[in-house]
Length: 145
Image (cartoon, rainbow, N blue to C red; front, side, top):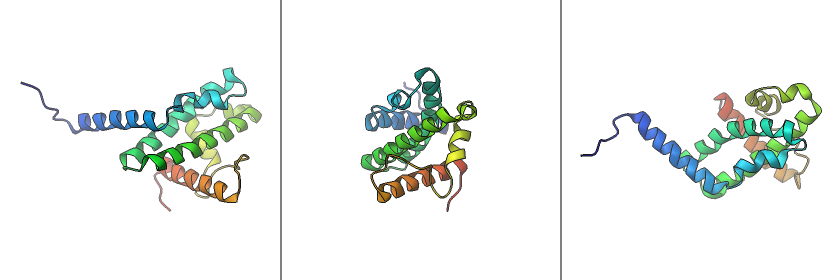
């Protein structure tokens, strides 16, 4: 006789594990993001790892909302860009390097968008990046606009 899961928490753990597996197939390189941002690996990689730890629940929520693979990957691409800008910032502000990741993120994103993305191809691409940053801000703060 097999034992059935009776706790709704066990069901959500299974759903979370499935969402994490899906994330790993959509964003195969997410574990390498911190190294890709690092100008000073010994200093930047730990900050980058903390940023990825904050980005991951947001991406998992998108998957749980049944967003398409294309949408999740688009959001991931813009979060990768945000991470690069945040690492660039901490390389010029040593105090920021010591901030918890969520505090660092919320210092740079708000209801209007994210920090200047220096590598955006044009204003339209930057506008989409800002929209992703706004959505991430709403996720982190539990607000809706």
